[in-house]
Structure formats: structure tokens, C-alpha cells
Image (cartoon, one colour):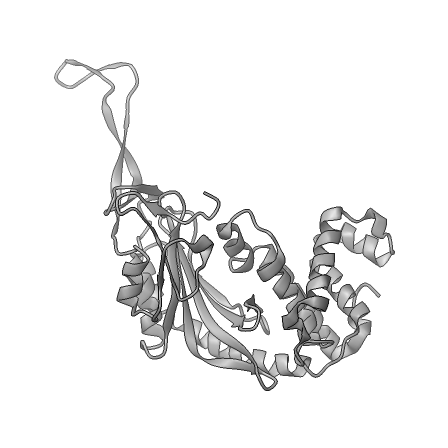
Length: 356
């Protein structure tokens, strides 16, 4: 099951919905109009409760009970640990400790409703991943755009994911999407993260309800991004400099960096070389890179890295792509590196490229 979307055998449906566009291998429910949060939960098949159920194990061999009788395979309670279970099909999602607090799917959706008052928010996708639907995700489009130049528009999204198996925090992130090529333009500006993480411990639900600070992150980053991207769209960069910037952004370790600085390209791995070549090809030939705001500009150089990880790179499955692009994986790290390099280039020109 490469797509990793949960299939509910009780209903015979995949736990996923999308507005208008077929996504995630065309599975799940495709709707034509943007739904309310209540409708989105139902369309994605997420309208179920998750509960904590006591855990038991069985003893091995023979033991003498209090009544003097011999008991075989006695049931024993496991203290301080619980199984998390879906109430709609009794699927076991994971094992958690006594302090773990479940955040129900409806509470994850109400988070979006509360931070923007329900006005203008558009639920675009939602679903469950994993063999039993242990991880859920939601993307919601916010009003307004980041505008670069005259007609290069970037839509503003909030992405939320949470798990019911104890494996990770609740994560809510601001994720701007460039319309013309669906690039995810993650960038942390001035040490301001684009996401918040909330642990599944006591008070998690209350903290989630108070996470309207994500809107503060969104507003701050939106203003900064629009200013910076419009500046970058006016700064020229040569094709040779774009290639160097891509290589610098993709550097995984000091050894690769040293080989590049010393001109020892024969020592570079095939994987690294192919990755840089593919990103450069995207920069030079993709039709979205030929717009006035991107062709031969620093903004275009940044999009070459963002676009590679979003639109070119092959991933094992869609969950792997989500982790890479949204949840602090390689795609997000390399895109952030590209952002930092473009910032330096805009200030100091070609001399700022570390591969000179």
C-alpha cells in the first residue's frame, strides 16, 4: 500500500477527501464545493472517537491462585499503559502511557475554526494515514494571497497533523503554496518558526484551542515573505550562479562541501549529482520558471530548490513526501538552506556563494 492512506474495511472506503482535484492516487472522496468542518470530517471518514483501553497480558506456566486452585495462562493487567482504539472499527492504533491525552479528530478541526473564527477558511484535504489510520492530517486554505510581481500569487495554508499512536506531537504549520507550480514555500524568517508542536499530555486539548498564535506566525511570515520575494524577483542571477546555489543548498555534509570547494566533482556521489542536476533542469526548463518573477531572478533560484522537492523528487510514498516537505525532513531543510543562501545573495551578490 504505497500511498499509505487508510482503508476502512467496515465502510469499504478510504479515509481521505479532496476538493475538486484528484490527489493521493485518486483514492477517497472528491467533492466539488469546499465543505464545513463538520462535512470535512465526515467526507474524510474521520468522524469517530479514539479511546484509551486498559492493556492486559497473560502469565506463562502454572501459578497458585488465592483460592488454592491452579491457574494456567492467567490474565494480568499492565499498569500505566493503554491501547488507543478507534471506536468505529475497534482498530488498535498504538500503545501510550497514562499521561497521554487523546486529541479527538473533531478537536483538530475545531482548531482551524477557532483561530480564524470560521470566516474564509476553506478545508481542502483531510485524511488518515497508516494501516489503521493512526495519523491524521488536514490542510486548510486561508483568505488572501502573498503577491509577487503583478500576477504570481502564493496561497496561504495551514497544515495540521496528529497521531493517535503516541509516536509524535500535534504539529500545526503555516505552508504557503505557489499557485502556478504547487511549490511549498516553507521558510523560517528571523528565527521565527513556521510551525508549533504540542505534546499529547495533560492540557493538550486546551493548548490546541489556544494555538491561535499560528495565525500570528502566518501573518508575520506572510508580510515578510511578500516583501522579500518581491525584492528577490528584481535581483538578477546568472545560470552558473543558480547551479552553485543549488549545489550549496543540497550539501548534506562537510565532506561534500569540501569536494565542491576544491573542485573535486569526481568525488561526489551519483545521488548528490543527480539531485543537483534535476533541480537545475527544473530551474532552466519548467514552464513555471519562465515567468517574469522567476526567470533569471533570485526568486526563481529559490523556487528551483522548493520546486524540486515538491514536484520532481520521487518518494517511497506520499507519507514520506509529507514528512520530507512539511515535517522537518530533507525537503524542508534543503529549502530552508536555499532561502538562507538567497537572502545572502540578495545582500552581498555572488561573493556570498560559499562555492566560489
